[in-house]
Picture 1 (spheres, helix red, strand yellow):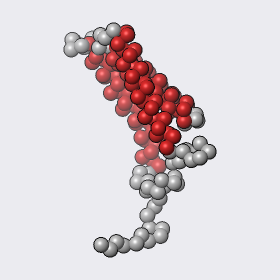
Picture 2 (picture 1 turned 45 degrees about the horizontal axis):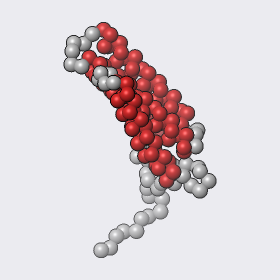
Picture 3 (picture 1 turned 90 degrees about the horizontal axis):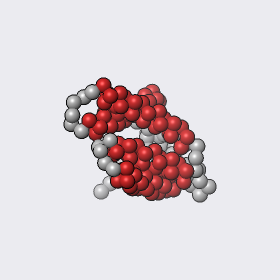
Picture 4 (picture 1 turned 60 degrees about the vertical axis):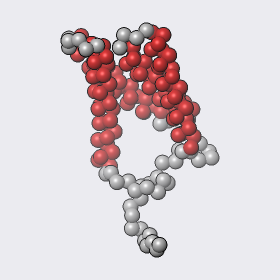
Length: 149
């Protein structure tokens, strides 16, 4: 089966070496840079509040817990994202693993589980996250340890 040869200069490529086109504008990337932590924070806060009330009535404390959890999640996400980009792959993966383990552990503990079970589940999530992200960061670097975009 015959295929047309690609014409040089026809497709806009991103500045990275992945060879994939960047289909979103710079404005879209700026919006997503802030919209992702806000959206995930609101979902996380709602989830914490729902686990805490365990199907009971919504109270003022429950709302406060949800909004404080959402704000803390957003602030920590933005902080981890800013710090992690400057770190080597081991620390980068460890920072995200600690964040995800702590976030999951707190969320799990709000469902009236024991401290020991919540800690065990948080450690399992953190270890899994570390292994996955370390592998990803390790396979997306060149020989000198520079990230490949």
